[in-house]
Image 1: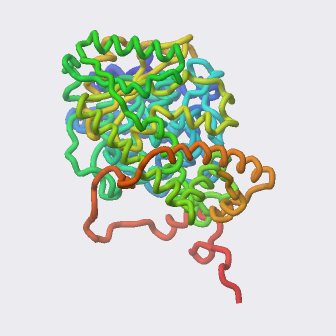
Image 2 (image 1 turned 30 degrees about the horizontal axis):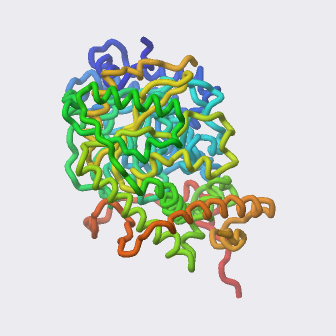
Image 3 (image 1 turned 90 degrees about the vertical axis):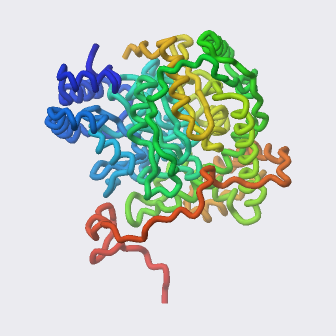
Length: 472
Length: 93
């Protein structure tokens, strides 16, 4: 096996036993980027020099066992979505507005990842400002799906998902405001975590919709996702919405199995709108859960059908407010550099917040949000977690939905409600249809990540879809 | 629902070309027609949700901490004058 194909767990083991160095591991990832980034367009910036410098430092530190224990990502190459501010490294949000912006500080999560010893290998492509479900809204060109380059990789964290799926790094970070981690994870056969709202600091992450933005990551396995979350989760005084609850060891229940757990299937998520083959694949998955000893219970979330409508009022409203700061005076270019999707969302949000329309749109959507939260609260009285498909369709071809915003927005129909409710979701592979990956999401109540990892791990061990790799 | 795109663009400080105005008017009107679906929902007596953490009045110690130097603060600026951000005049005589 090539070094760049390793998981965090495996790479840590190899570094500890001195089978290879961090410099070798980092070079293997850089080599893979050089070979395939031209085709896949997963990275906007590759920080080769900085990465190799950090890797050399990590190798020096790794000679001391206590440092290796304390720094849980020591020497591991990580890619960051280009929405994460990195001191001294260009951070574009994949928009021409910020195409030459160099932050003066690191995002709180970036600092945590660096403090844990990780090697920052580069900044990944995404839909500009994280606006999109396909990865095509980037001002730096679309990212391609490594399983078939004519297909979209899913967005908005397109490059982050692709960089992990194609072994250009060991893990990567993303943001999920309406499905932007879970959807690309499912289109790429990788694991994606959207944490509970407020569990990970948003400080220094370029804001999309502040009441919905969740900061998460992509990994090759469920265990890696838990290990990574051990680094990023926690309260931050620079983000007043971070939760004060103590951070647990997220790997603690991985081996518990799911015997006797109650798993809900939301019937409104598995309807005739779902692609037939995707539906069959999901039904097979439900059977696997039953075989593993879970009790399967049908659940109703009646307000699901209003999720997209509520989301496409609340989210653009917050977008219009967050993007108001980009005037080109202190940094970046002026507002004429915004792309079409950003303009649409800014105008939509400006309209729904404007005098005379606020009550009919924004306030109404905030009330529907309450009902969607109640749906989930009622469901979690009956079950430990819910499982559902991530996207109603398989990956689609590049260009297919780009001129039809509503069609594109409907791709998020199964993911946005988790953001409206602030609950966590773990997206993981459930197989392939015609060579393209399919995923599911496991949703639980707020702060139930330990349980999501427990459930995800049991399924992953029983199926091992992750071991299949794209032919690049 | 029809939307007055030039007006909204002005509020949002966006400059649009005439052909853009036409395209966005159609797209935004379609989206607003779709979200009108929410009118079906009875939300009388339903409280609104603006945040999901339940946290209130989050405070921190009011202590000075290191911040950006003047040079750092100006490091990304395109127009500066004597170490200050240069902006267009907003008042005239």
